[in-house]
Length: 378
Ligand SMILES: *Cc1c(COP(=O)(O)O)cnc(C)c1O
Image (cartoon, rainbow, N blue to C red; front, side):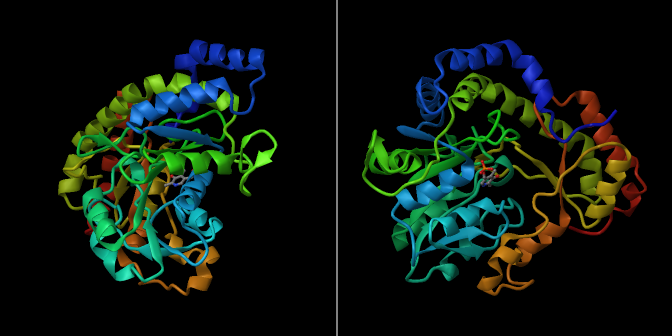
């Protein structure tokens, strides 16, 4: 029996009646775009993350683009982003007309290394986008201190971190704006595309709301040139149901992570494998359970042979993507991000994962010929 990397069907089966009822409500009302279900979800999600405002948009990439624009950042400006993130973080800066400037990551947390930011700041720098990668908050206080000192805006990319906490507070509402993705596989996922910007700044919220809907708040009156980045009614209804389960699902993810750590601790202390480390300031929600090993490709093959699906997040750091070739970066520019791209492996992680499945993944890692070969230091 295959152990899937994520299992969206198991989750749907568990909440089928609630979901079907919510979808039926949308069909009955024909409120397919924005509308009451989206508004209800926006209020609930704002309250959940502790923000004054939440504006639902068409996806997480659009959320970042609109947050950047709404914070007044655009052509001629530079925005600091991590070199190791999903491509969309940088891409959205580019589509907002600004230039992403890459900074390396911290080896322990895999998140933006605050000590590397200062050197990347120029007179054009306007913003910093820390990413809460894999579901763990970046260390925000040093970033906020630096941003305050240098007059920069902080926009959180919380696309992988719904419900994660930094020093006890939920991420997303801690910077000027926070961006979420509701891509189906995220901790809070729609049944299609979805995203949101949360903020405590009324003006940023107003601008995002304008920009997502053709620059218009009032029908056929267009104040600015915007986009069609609206959230659909069906997604609002699905997200409203799923939000009620999010804390329970995140707790299960955390329990699964502890179980992996228990079972793989032995391999880790042999120096063969690095397990994800929960930083003292963070409550990790394990969107991904990412281990690291120099024998990554061989370990992935061994798991594949045992019908265990895995992923690599991400195999090529953003500064080395063909799309950013014009930036002139080369291998060696951000050594830690590059090292992680070659050594990371994401094990199956989703709330409905069973104890037996976790046991089989861990056994496969321990028993494979690799068990003994996994000796190189990470
Ligand atoms: C998923 C993701 C995005 C983009 O979200 P979409 O909804 O797929 O557009 C942006 N940043 C990070 C870190 C992500 O994981």
